[in-house]
Picture 1 (cartoon, rainbow, N blue to C red):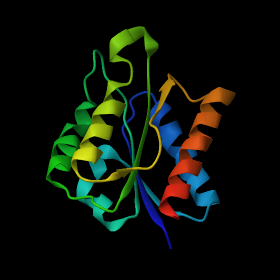
Picture 2: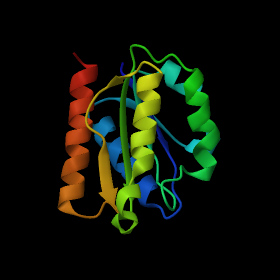
Picture 3: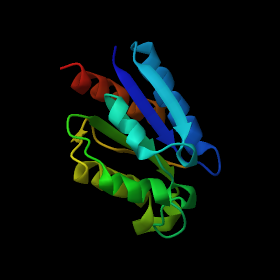
Picture 4: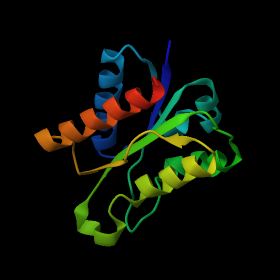
Length: 150
């Protein structure tokens, strides 16, 4: 059976909502999912699953979540060759050029670790509460599952 790990960081609850939506959609496709807050797990947990997903927020002007900095830095020591990854997260367009840069940084960390990008990253302004947001997340999950089942 295919296994996925969804790791999220959330201050306002927006990214926890995104992680919950992604988890539900994966479970609907018969994927076994472990969901965990970023400070409660270790990136080596990704070595035990097929599909690796991070849902980070971007703090202030492009900063990673404080509670996720160790996790992010420890990803540099991983070999995730053969793993499929996806990154989705929320931010605030108010921050302009810094909007959702944590999504980009985690994508780069996965690529550095040798993981294969399963789909385009998703960036959501604030809460995932529009039909467009839900469609983006649906495509995100569908493409990840298609990649992992090839």
